Every structure is written in C-alpha cells, then in structure tokens.
Image (cartoon, helix red, strand yellow):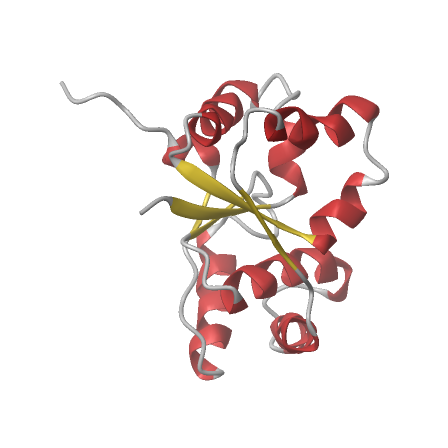
Length: 156
C-alpha cells in the first residue's frame, strides 16, 4: 500500500529552494517511482496561482510520468475544523490557509502531511495543538513531517 502524502504549497516551492531542494526532490523521486501518492487540495491549487511559473508548472511535469495524484476539496466540514483550530488558538487568524491544509488532510485521512512550514505547521507545539483539536472533535491524529523525514534510506 502506497503512502498517501498531502503536500502543501511549501513542498512545491521547496523543489526550487536551495535549502530545501535536495530532500524535496527525493520526495518527488518517490512519487515518480510510484512509492507514494500525492494528495492535492484546491487550497494548494489556489495558492499556486500566485507562484512563479516554474513552481506552477512542477506538478504538471510529474503527471507525464503517470505519477498518482489524488484531488481533494475544502468542504464545509474541513472549513469548520480549520476554524476550530483558530478558535482553540492553535494558531492565529492569519494562518487560516495553513489550518485548511491540516483540516483537509485530517478529514481525508491521509497518511502524512508534508510541509516545510516550521512556524505554523511542522513544529511540535502546533502538531500537538492540531491533534488535540482533532481528538476532541472525533477525528484521528495527523502525522505531520518535513520531507527530510520521508526519504527512504537503503539498509546498511
């Protein structure tokens, strides 16, 4: 069974960022080898509209390799959960898009959410906050990781 990995916008942009390129490209190689499925939301696609052209074009380039992508939507249920994260003060109101990514990933029961956003997403206090809200509201916890943690290493 392939891992279903929800990616946020920082992953697509990270492909071209000197600091994050190597592990991001390794994650995309896993996609190309059909080891993982990327879960893409309409929130991601909306955010990519304002991105530089090379960032906008990246996912389409991988579609030609017949990589598997799964499309998911921001539903009213996900909007409500995202607002609950803010109401519970996991993050502030300026982080609504980040909360929407977390909520969509939670509701769609992805295996992992991948992000380079260490301020609002990939840090232990935020992860605990999101998962506390999830559990309080009857949802499962969400694995949140950066691509360095998703690289497959050879045995040895």
